[in-house]
Image (cartoon, rainbow, N blue to C red; front, side):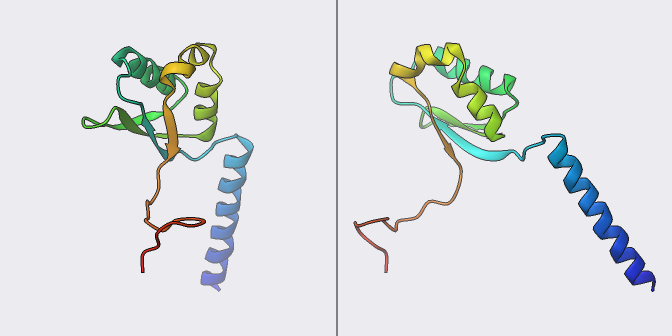
Length: 116
């Protein structure tokens, strides 16, 4: 009896918390890798970091070998950054490449070499 009551209360609590997160518009932060092509001025990288932080991103690592950094952000924060008026000015020459972080494999999609 106690286990059933606990299970029902736990399910109700989880449902309530999930509904509250959806209704308040909270998005989960996911990992992204932001990279720049060689020759990108440090002022552009600093601008990108500043604007992404203002949009709610959290910089988790700055790379030293390549120009770029890793961050955790919501999709809304990334979209907000990409639609900035100031971003459009740098987009043509120094546009950062923003990719979701994830596993990298060697299997080709639609041709190429396959690992066996």
